[in-house]
Amino acid sequence: MRVLVTGAGGTLGTTLAPMLAEAGHEPVLQDVRALRTPYEFVRGDVRSPGEVVAAARGAEVIVHTAAIHGIHLADHSPRDFYDLNLTGTLNVWEAAVEVGARAVVFSSTMGVYKSHNAPGEGAALREDVPLRPGDVYGWTKVAGEELCKLYGRTHGIPSVALRFGMFVPEPFFRYGIRLLYGGVDTRDVARSVMASMEALTSGRILWGAFNVESVVPFTEEDGPQLRSDPLPVLDRYYPGASDLLRGRGVGTLAPITVYYPTDHAADVLGFRPERNFDRWLEELRGRPEERAEKSPPWP
Ligand SMILES: NC(=O)c1ccc[n+]([C@@H]2O[C@H](COP(=O)([O-])OP(=O)(O)OC[C@H]3O[C@@H](n4cnc5c(N)ncnc54)[C@H](O)[C@@H]3O)[C@@H](O)[C@H]2O)c1
Image: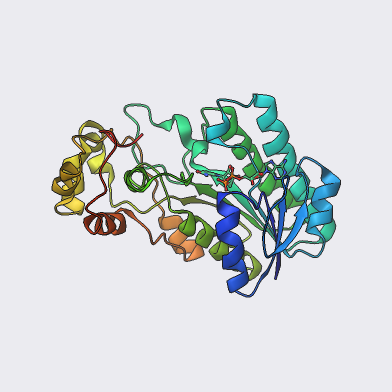
């Protein structure tokens, strides 16, 4: 299938494009800046309706990743977020209708839940909790999800919103500890897009919002202990974890106030992240030179 990826020069797009090609698809990459890529590239701005339509011609699926996100809150205004994230998503949907696309994959975020981590609330953030973004970024993604549902109802084009955890590139140690705090490996993020495309174009689903964070084994009963001192909880699920971490300079871990169950994506999309904390611990054992730069290592 011909698949348009907006914002394709970003972290997700650069991992996704070769995966699409390997699976026999024809990636068409769009970005506002010039990209050096072996794949078809159309330079364009998602804020421009005509440029999105031009890139989308012939595409059966649109994977919309172009956005500014959490790391941009410090140096971008709410209006910047509105203009790129919301207008861009509206333009993608209008283009999907105009070119007759079969499906849209929308990049959402765990930031749609942001203000849930108040004391006294459950630690598990499942897809059906009321959304309460804590900043304009999360709000643009809630609004983007609503646009997906609206265009699904009015034009019959199926879509998913993938509520990604953090996958901004980080050094090995921070990347690994972050897997306990809603982090996720970029390769798993790209795999979730592939699984969504399959579910949408085969007609299995018309709409769905899915957590895409690394798999953690925690339960609600772990909540109080995760908030006060996560290390003993880790030892229950990953025997020897705290000794290994202490040996690498981790005296303590920051409270884990929430986690993101991923069984909905497993049940509906058949997708489950593969690069989880257990796998990272194994890698850490084999890399004796790796040490935490600070304690706690994350955030
Ligand atoms: N990276 C994360 O940790 C994370 C977490 C949750 C959700 N997300 C979401 O996932 C998506 C992909 O994230 P990413 O980390 O790959 O992003 P990124 O910041 O690495 O890349 C974004 C790309 O969009 C391009 N872009 C910017 N403005 C554009 C415009 N006007 N028109 C076209 N392209 C434009 C940029 O040049 C860049 O190549 C985003 O929608 C983001 O909100 C990311």
